[in-house]
Length: 101
Image (cartoon, rainbow, N blue to C red; front, side, top):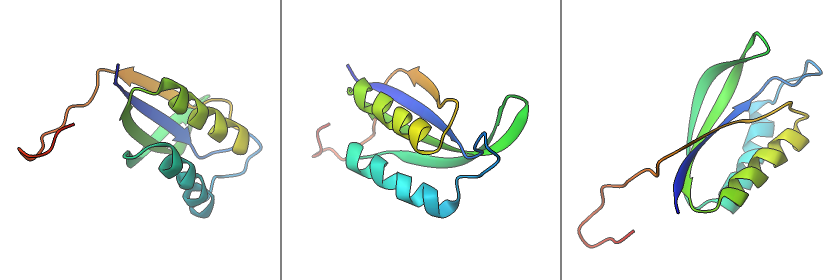
């Protein structure tokens, strides 16, 4: 069953470093290889009392394992404590009459 997943990727690194725009663009390739469609938003979050720039990625899929793999990849690649994950009912789409989803 499809679900909508919102993944919150914080850009601060516990060692004091930061996931730069260049590093994020490289990680975005993982998203493109994993999902056929997604939405990225720039948001502000907080972790352990510290505000941080955050990338919010929303995807609707029936493949929870792929979502988990992407989250784990970010945690491991950028030495993160965690990636926030919100699971909700699947997003619906308004389409042209001729298109079938």
